[in-house]
Length: 125
Image (cartoon, rainbow, N blue to C red; front, side):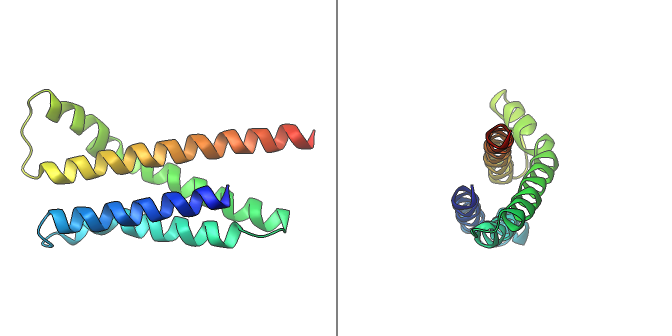
């Protein structure tokens, strides 16, 4: 799971960088996915260890950050994106698309982590 966490971190960093450039480099809030991605990549790097307790600690922190990121972006992301597809106008549609992409990525990350945690628990039992 540490590799997947690093991968999701890199994808979020790229998403934030792309969003920042796509908005004309005027909105530093477009870099928020990059900040979350850096934290996830660092936690994935720290979790890449043979020490089971350390790996569990860092992966649980990573999934908590992923869940908080998802919950923080679901309203302004997925829900607003669906409203935008139905014709609602937003002042910054690129921001809505970026938040929706971040929300979906973090949801997939959290689901993969939970599945991994459940499988690890079953393997120990």
